Image 1 (cartoon, helix red, strand yellow):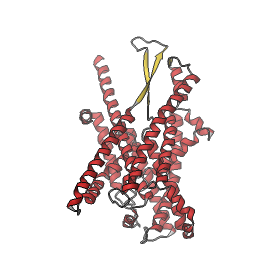
Image 2 (tube, one colour):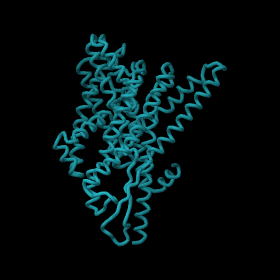
Image 3 (cartoon, one colour):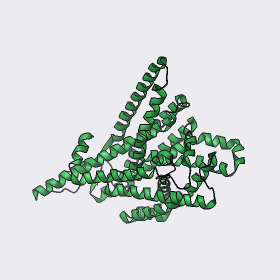
Image 4 (cartoon, one colour):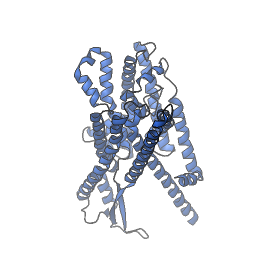
Length: 441
């Protein structure tokens, strides 16, 4: 990895992409520390045990804890993207038509996604501001008038659209997926404070008889992290190579190749999607309870909050099931067996012992289902294990409050790092290929 970065910095074009990405992430991190005017963000420190706040902080890249202008982060964009992709599944004929129009259709769908993001961001910002203002004893908003809430909603919506624009700039001019890189930067920025909390809990103001327990626990925690990182890296890079034969022979071109299908073709997007979606029910319930205090007296409200909290076992299982479901959904969105079979037929290529067209589509669909089953179960287990650990040992531990999100954070960090490394390798190979061609000229 370090050798790859060293070689990448030696190429001016790639170095510019890396520095541009770092600069955009720096701008984002600065924005996460600019608190929205008219808000007392210190009252949020008393709500740190709230699962919804921790979940939103993860998706927003750390901006929610300071209730900054970037507090919403990319969460509205993720929600809008999921809705638009679901509507493309033979629900809205116009969207289905656009999805088959290539680059032109993709631009139209992206424009609709932006408009939906704008609406979702405004509604979500008003709801979250009202929720936190009602839950905090001192009051999050200093002057809680309708005009103030609308103004805060407009500021947060503007911040969301700006963050999405930053993500698009990273995707187009930098390297890596912009949305993933922004979330990645927020998670990495929280690592030092987590280490400090861990140190304070286990090595500060403890008796000499407990020091060995702390050492054993830290060693066990490090070993668990190493094992999870190793297994996750292996699964994320695992792929099935499908042989491809070509009917059209070109001078100097190979007659056969292979089509790589990853075990986890969806990458880390199912984790990001599930983290965003799972916060919606609890946010709606808590917002309604704030507006109607009598609602909190009903038992079904407590039951719903228990189910939709990732810190509980039922909530953790629901969270893992969402990850599994989104893994299958996004894998088929990424690969799209129908388009894959069509492209192979147009290129004059085929899979040995498989009929072209519909036969190829069915074969790839079945294979993708088997691969995604393994990938989905893996993501679900990795996301669920830290939640179970936090329920067992982390209930009264400051350092382990966020352990329930530890699996999610690790999956995002590893997935984004691998994707960025592969993109850098691709840029390096492209550079070498172009240089070879220039030399021959």
